[in-house]
Amino acid sequence: TNGTSSGVVNYIVIVKPNNQNFIYGDLNGDGSVNSSDYALLKRYILKQIDLPQDKLAAADLNRNGSVDSIDYSILKRFLLKSITQLPL
Image 1 (tube, one colour):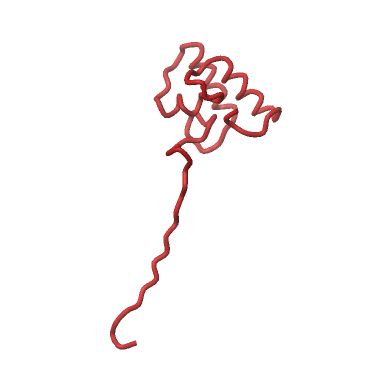
Image 2 (spheres, one colour):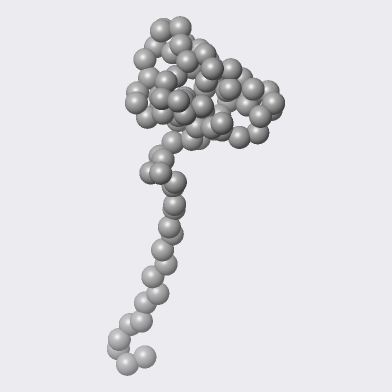
């Protein structure tokens, strides 16, 4: 070359629908939905623990604006593979 540099810039674009920064059902934030999340949801419903707002959004599996035993049932069905995706 003549002393000038030519560069290539690569970009990675991650698109998250509706500014969603969580995985439905992943209450402990480890990137997967499993029995640990199920146990956390149970403890929340029994008022043994509080969950931060972002985790409450991840726990609202029927997207009705509240986290309750219906969401707990949905998570159980997902873990047992009765349903294949979250949220409903």
